Length: 76
Image (cartoon, rainbow, N blue to C red; front, top):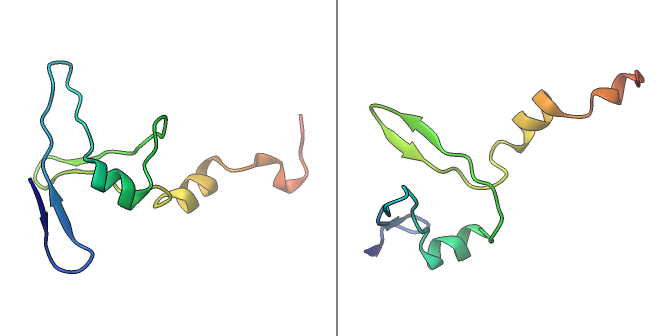
C-alpha cells in the first residue's frame, strides 16, 4: 500500500519476514535518501508505536553526547 496523504505526508505498509526484517519501500528510501548500509534509529513507544525519524534528526543530540571530547584541549 502506498497512499499519499496531504503534501509531504505519506503512508506505506511493509511486511515483517520470518527473521523480523522489513523492507522499506523504494519510494520511501528515495524520498529520505536511505541507502544500503545506512543505520537507522527506531524509536518505540508502547502506546504510540514505532517511528523511524529521518537521518540527521538526532545529529545535534549525538554530537553533543558523543562529540569530540578533545575540544577543551585535553588529549590522551
